Length: 335
Image (cartoon, rainbow, N blue to C red; front, side, top):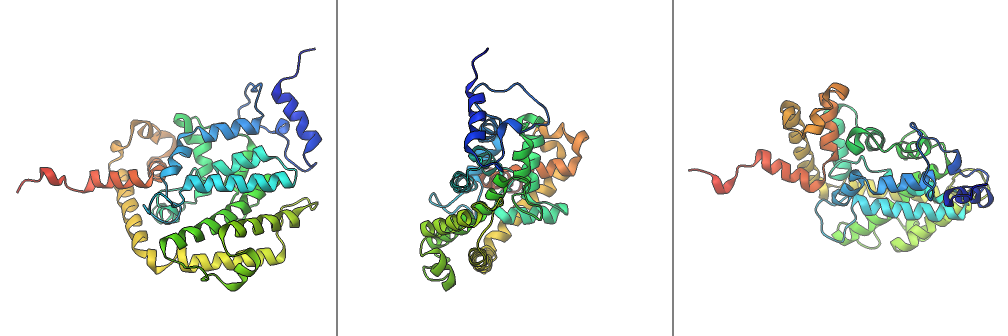
């Protein structure tokens, strides 16, 4: 009898250690089945495929909230890493599958636009419909690896596309990421807003400080603890009524005073202008796109291909492209 592989022993261990309702990597399925890795489970392999993808690498140059704000502000990549760690902490406490939560968390924002949610709003206005969770699924399923996609498991793709919106993920691990995403962005966007001077200590509603604590570390700890305690033994991912109420108050405050604030209105207008000009330029000059995108026109149509290209740009490259296309080369100007 052949000796079991590291992966097979890990899969067996999942049945011994994880909760009955946890997702088991042996039962995961892909659209295109493939030879198994002798060392990594399916979910571990998905995590690695996302981590080594071009779309994940680009996240380090994509805005979270503050556009070109400085070295100490969160980016889309650091946000994804924070969501991953929060998700894994919760999954471990509930004896759910950490590898699945990690893969979903790392991949949940790979379809995000440049310039944060301002870019997402610009693409929705230009195309009639655009949401980054659907684009994230499109990236991992069709756009990565030169159009072949990453061939991720159904469980990971379900968690990515349903990390926001009306539908809940089918797995408990996906539901963890859905709430961990909110824990991460509320806490670190508050921290970045203090750093930017847009908010000052004490600005949040009193109930947020009373229930979650005074600083981001205590806030994250409080929200994570609330999720774990409310979900333990319930077969679902829950929050206490008080925890959910406080998070909703926190979120409403951040939308009013940060995300939609008048102080960032000029940045939002600039970002929307850049993306609008780039989108319209490439629709009219489709042949100026990289050849790998032009070649996909017959499959997806011109508008979708331009959407894929512009949505995939980093903040810095979008600005660079705008300058190259629309700004005169000042040093070569002839009087």
